[in-house]
Length: 566
Image (cartoon, rainbow, N blue to C red; front, side, top):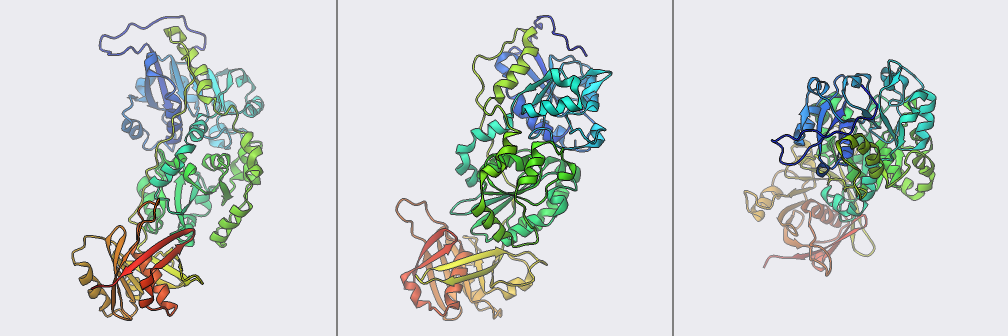
C-alpha cells in the first residue's frame, strides 16, 4: 500500500449514477463500538462533494457479532472483506486498527473508538505497557507505519505514542473528539431526552454504565442494576442501564435480556447498544459507572459520578481515564444506595475531575473541522476540496430504551404530614428478593405472584377500558376472600379513578384538577390507592377526604379531589 500522494485525476463517471461520485471512501469496522463511532466520522464526508462511502467488516474480532446487520439496518452500502480488499479506495477510515488492514488498497486513517486510548489489551498489542491503538504491533508492518494518519483527541496521546511507537508520531494528528462535540451540541435537548425516557414530574435519572470484561461494573457486581432499581423510590427516581456494545456482542442480545429481565420488570430502562447512551447521559442526574468511556463523558458533563469498579487493573496508568478512576468517588454496592447517591449529590464538585477530563478532551468544538482537514486532502487528486464552512455537529438521536410493562408490585411507606398532606414512597419489589417489608404491599391487577396478590393491602386496575365496569370490578375484588385488601382502585381516565374502601364500604371518585399553567396531571391509580391507605392507617376517615388530598412523592405534589356518588 503506497502512502505517497496520488496524481490528480478524476474518475470516469458512470452513466448509471444520478449524482457524481468521484471519490471512493471505505469505512472499516471491527466491532459495533468502532462502527458507531465510524458513523459519526463518516457523516463529515459530504455526498454533495461527490464522495461515495462503502462499509466493510474487518474480520477476526470476538466482538463482531451483528455488525453486518447494523450496517444493513442503516441502509448503507456494505462490501464483504473479500470485495473490499479487491477494490481500490481513495481513503479507508477505521476507529480501531489491526495489522490485517494492510490488505486494503487505500491510505488508512485510524482513530480511537472511545474517549482516547486507555485500555491495556495485551492479546492485541503484545505489549503490557502500550494501550490498544498505540502499540507497535498494531501500527507497524514490515518496518513501516501502517496508517497514513492517526487521530488523537489530545496532544498527551502523542506523547505516549512517542514512547510506544515513535515511528508513528509523524502521522499523528490532533483531531479532538467529535463524539463529545455532538454530546455538547445536544445539551439543549435535555428535556426532550428525559421525556423520551419517561423521566418527568420531579423524577431524577440514575444511569448505570458498564464497560466489558471481568473488571467492569457488571463483571464485578452483576446484580447492581437490579439493586438500584429496588433501592430507589420509583416515584422519585428512574434507573437506566448502558452496556458496552462488546457485552451484547459477546453474550448475545437474547442472553443479556434474559439476565436483565427481572430488573426490567421492576422498571429498569435498557439502552440498546447502537445508540441512546449519549442522550441518556445528557438526561441523567447521577451516573454509576466504571472505567468505560461513557463514564468519562459523564464526568465531562459534570454529572454526579460514583464508581462501582475502577478498572485500574486494565488501564494504562499514564492515561487520563486511569487518573479519573483514581480520583472519582466510590459506590459501595452493599451499602445504602439511596443514601450514597444523596450524599454524593450534596458533596458534588465538578472541579474534582476536571484535570483528567481536560487531559483527554482537547480542541473542543473543533473536531468536525479537524477531521475534515485530515480526510479531505486524501481526496484532492479527485478534484475534491475542503468545504468552505466548518461542519456543525448534529444533535444525538433521541433515546429509545427497551422496557417492560413496569413494576406491578410495590413496597409502600408513608405518613400524614402536619399540614395534612400524605408523603408516599414506593419501592418496586422483585420475586425471591423481597425478604423484609418496609411497609405494606400495593399491586396492580397485572401482578402474577400469588402470595403478593393475596397479601396486598392495595389493588389497582390500570387498564381504563376493562372487561368489567369499574364499579363492578371494585366490588368483585373488595369482596373477595383476601382479608388483607383494604383499598381497590380502578382507572377511569388519565386524571380520574374510582375507589372502594373495604373498611367503610365507601365508593368515591377521585380527580386530579389541573392547576393554571400546569400540564394536565396523570393520576396513577396505584399511587392514589397507596396514599389513601396511608391516610386510613393514620386513623383518618374517608369523610375527611371530602376536602381533598395532597399527595407528595419527593418534590412532586399532586392535588386530588374526591366526590361521592349521588
